[in-house]
Structures are given as structure tokens and as C-alpha cells.
Amino acid sequence: MKNIFLLASMAMLFLFGCSSQTANEKKATASDSTQTAALYVCPMHPEVTSDKADTCSMCGMDLEKK
Image (cartoon, rainbow, N blue to C red; front, side, top):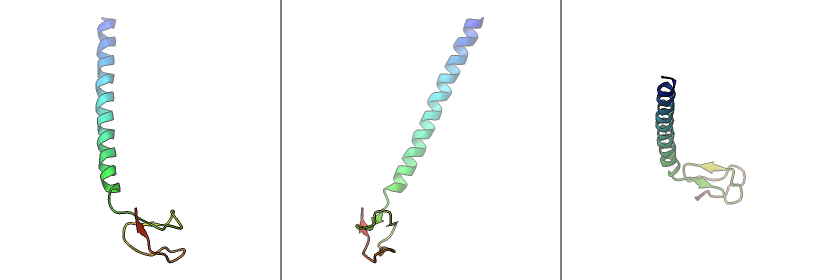
């Protein structure tokens, strides 16, 4: 009886672990698609980024599409 309970518990943990991993993969895929949108970066200051063509707030250079 203990063996059946142990096997059932292990099977449930395995199934829930797999479904949780799949959910995390779906979230990662969704966030990857939002990151594929255009990103503009200053060539001199890579920490300055924007989602639209603009100028760098530090040096005034045009941001380049990454």
C-alpha cells in the first residue's frame, strides 16, 4: 500500500512539474515576442535606449536601431 502511495505521489509531482515548466516556457515565449520590437540605442551610451527613433538624452546623437 505504501508503494502505491509513493508511486502515485511521484507521478503527481512529475506531472505537475512538467506542466509548470511548460507554463514558464509559454511566458518566456510571450516576453521574447515583446522584446523583438524595435529597440533604439545610443552608439556612445548603450545604457540609453528607447522604443522609438529619438536622440540621446546625454549627448544628443541619434539613436540607432539595434
